Length: 452
Image (tube, rainbow, N blue to C red):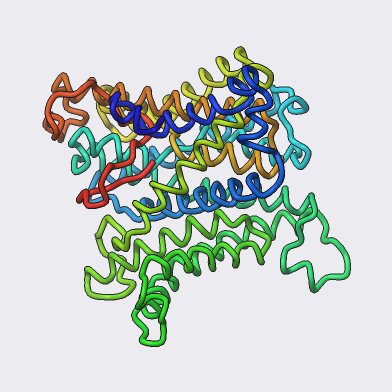
């Protein structure tokens, strides 16, 4: 299904999710329940293998997202970046917190969810912006090097780093409320009070991120180049995968969800690759791609499609979907995020047309929005209906951003007062086609390959 959607000039990820939807309880489960249970059993070796593939696909997808976070403002307007980042993150997050108090949380909460964790999920769902999807959209439109792109990516990177830290806190709190026990509790004879627990899960992810960000690139580069590292000498791809899994295991040992280890490992590998190009193992230069060791095309061709297909399998629009809730949640989420970005841009002195373009672009949630939905659902923080709503929110907002920017470029409208109109690099195409959720490149040799 993914390749079919590529031929139709549509995002591959939508085809993968739709393929899973067709094989799930929504379609095949109704037409042939026995066949559906045989094809996708709920337990046994097949279910275990699919779960392992899906989990690895999720970790690698988040790892490559972390690699995309290694970007700089590139000399873009700092006042605009700062104001959009602060207002565009704080205001939507506050709206999300307010929405949580107005909504009926009992109908949206999973077994491990609480008022605190579900409220934070609401805030993240409203505030999240997808770095990979928006970079892919702008790459396909030929505007990735524009002033507009530098502003959008600089803001999106800052927002996504903060939101991944908040996600680690949410998952840690959910784990603390279930059977999970972090390493620090092993030295205590009794469970810590709530304040200590909240402090731990708020501080440890930040410290872990800081340690990996500053020390990780040098460690990764030196160990990869060491003569004694037989794994790296025989297969750089295998060593990189091992590095990802080690950081994921370290997070699990600290009581943090492994996906935080995956995203920090991506940032680390990207910085290590940039540092080598700029004269040092961790110089943190201006390079925009992590080193090409073959892991990305392998993961995107094998593991990540399984992850998105199983996301589609879990969508049940017949029994676990509230259309009215989706409508008002989508409307309020788009309004809050777009208005906050527009307001920040206007306060920074940008023209109204520039502010509107920035607002629409940064409303795309893409892959990170789907990751937020799937990991909180897997942690049983949210229920299946809210999971479905978050997935659809991510797909719809990404499609809207791709369509808007595609039409603007096709009409020759400058996106900022410093940008000249740039035609699409591959000839005429349907505005926004194939870019809405971050279509994966079909070859690994693309000079500016980007992810969902």
